[in-house]
Amino acid sequence: QVQLVESGGGLVQAGGSLRLSCAASGRTFSTYYMGWFRQPPGKEREFVAVISWNGGGSAYADSVKGRFTISRDNAKNTMYLQMNSLKPEDTAVYSCAAGRTDWGRTTHLSMYDYWGQGTQVTVSS
Image (tube, rainbow, N blue to C red; front, side):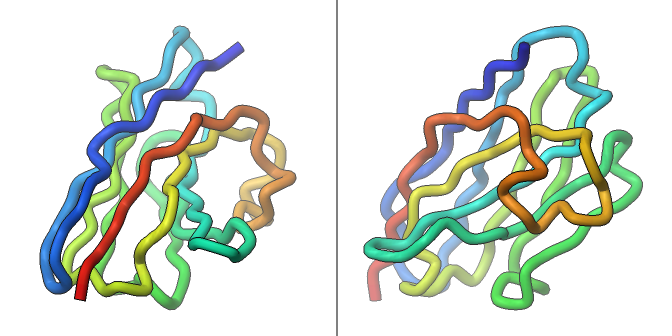
């Protein structure tokens, strides 16, 4: 069992930055790939980024590529999402997730076993 808790969300102006954190419980954190998803108002949850077990591999949605950076610190059981050059369309509830089913399909929600409650990010224009 893995419990995930996100933090770092808030209100920021367009062009600003935020860093989200996802703290995980348990001693098996390093055996999971970790992902960030977001759900904009009135829309479905969508993939943002994923990072491999040891941080050696990562992938991003086209909409955030070049602006967001995912990272992890296995010694601290924590994953991060550095978000720069934020846009109003980045407004959403951001959730972290852990999985180890299929690294090749990590853009799919069903490939994750555990989810956090989410943190709100609001970008004003």
